[in-house]
Image: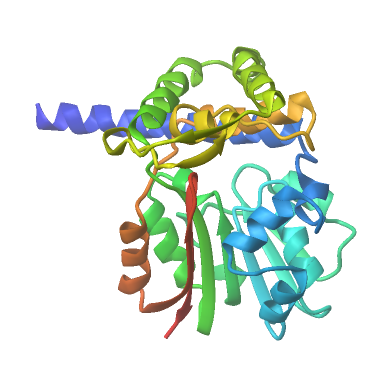
Length: 306
């Protein structure tokens, strides 16, 4: 009986990995330029979100941080948008490498005009020794989509040069009603193909748009049992934070907003974590934490190898 259970679990894991692989392959092949321009635009919300949670107030501070780093890795680069951001703010002669399991070909096309940038098809849980070592490794919204996030992180740490730094962003454990609703929707659409799931999510995206358009601000008390923090919230963000993901941002088209919701709901492998857990990963790898940030959606941590 034990062997039968283990075999069943192995099959489930393989199916989840296959589903998640296809989910992201479809996403990037059908939306090769998603958020590409906005990521490097200092006037965009996307740029500010990335820079600020990593501990930098502006592009100049980010450039100062990257100065002198000779090799940088974007681990799980997707369409290459963050790879391009890293290249823009690094020294001219810095080599920037992107790796991705599902979209390396998309990133290669998007980044072909940049010098000292290369992209490889790699699994974060596989052998990465042939790509060399790095002064800085960045892995945004990737580890939680691998079958073993901790082992993926450990694998990346092995690529750090002495005193090298690694920065990651992973999903956090959210309010209980948000967790329930997210998994409920995920379980319904995960077996749908890209077109079917996108159509199913249209109503959630439209809900987010209408709520954002209302422009209503509400003051709410703390409700500990539901994980609701006291404060003043935009109505759409209040629902987004604590009940279900209904992303909307006016800088994106309706289709692009829908893809961002797809990115959250469709991949079957989407683990969530606590700050203490992530800090433990750094401690176990002899990394000294220099930056940590927890928002309503995720956890950002950066640390240096001792």
